[in-house]
Length: 293
Image 1: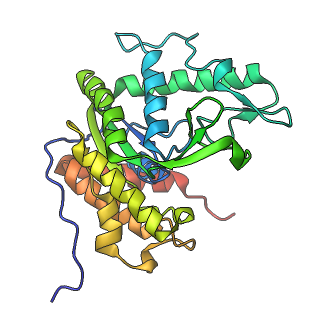
Image 2 (image 1 turned 135 degrees about the horizontal axis):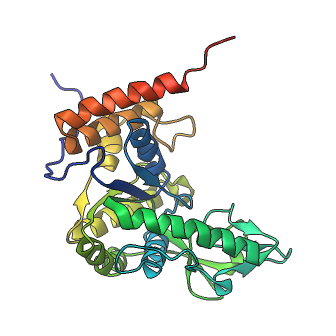
C-alpha cells in the first residue's frame, strides 16, 4: 500500500562534480537553503551574493547587470560599475536605498553605498562568469513597480506603499523577458536550471499564492533550454504535510530541505561524487564541532 505520491527523479544527463566548474544559485531564499547544503558537501558555490530576489523581473535585471560589466573573455574590470546614482532612491529621512536589493543596501552616504554595491557586483559577476551551472529559483510572480521610474523593485525597503504599484506578471511576460537571457547564458557554455520555490507567499492569500506559483510554472515550462527541477512538487505534492514546514507554516523545514537535496544529489551527482560529498560533509561537521571546555 502506498500512502503518498513520491517525487520521481528527474531525468538529466547533466552532472555536477567537485572541481568541475562552479555552481551559482540565484533567487528565492530557497536558493540559500540548497546553496548552503552544497557548500557543506564541499562544492564550489555562490548563492545569492546580494541577498534573495523573489520575482523574475528583479532576477533578470540583476543577471543582466552582471553580464553588462563582464568582458568577452569572462574577466571583470576592478573599476567596473554596474550601478550608478540613478539606481538609488532617496527617502524622506535622507537615507539612500538600492531598491534592486534587500534592505541592507541602504545608507546615508550614496557614494559609499554605490561603492559597496559595485564592489560586490564585480565579485558576483566573476562568479557568474566561471560558473558552469546556473540555478534560478523563482519565488513569486507578484512584484512592485516603482511609480517614479517604472522599474520593478527587488525589495520595497519599507517605503510607503503609495510609491509602488503592485501587479502580477503573466507567463508570457516572464518567458519573453527570460528567453533571450537563457540563450545568452547557454551561448556562454552554462547549463541553466530553474525551479519554483515551495515557500508560500501568504501575504497574497492562499488563492493569490496558487495563482503566482501557477504563473511561474507555466513560464518556466515555456522556456527553451532550461532544465526544470521539481522542488515545488516535492514539498507540495509529495511531502504534503505541515510537519515538513517551519513554525511559520510557510518555509520548508530542515527535514524537507534535506529531502529535496537528496533528490537533487541523486539526479545530478555520479556515484563517485556522492561518495566524495559524504566525505567532505563529514569533514565539515568535524570542523564545525566545538568541544565543551
